[in-house]
Image 1 (cartoon, rainbow, N blue to C red):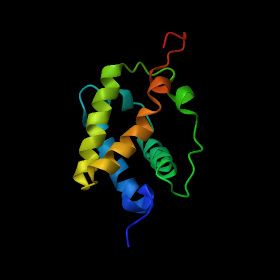
Image 2: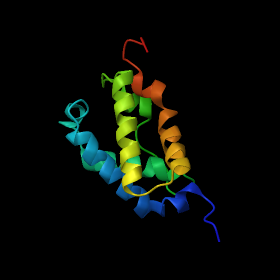
Image 3: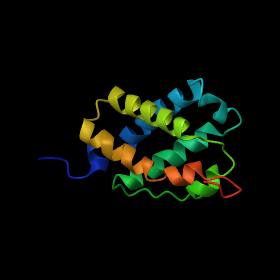
Length: 125
């Protein structure tokens, strides 16, 4: 019997957590993105990102952390940073043999927040 939800196909919370952990390892080690995480609570970020992706994939977990725009308003992300993060997310998904269609669905869930990620305190987003 086929697994119905993206959440189930990704292996539930444990599977999603494994992808998120790999993804954050890549983010922190990346030359262009790593500096954004120097003073961050990466353990907390891993937990909240796992909850976010679990909820987006149809799981029972809920993302109840700071809203995305508010959490990133003082982070000077550029579109190039977002592109690089997406590339790293695809690599993490590939590491866990996530099928292309499901990987695209995960990336689309994150990409839906690009405007919030690129927002600036002065409103020039």
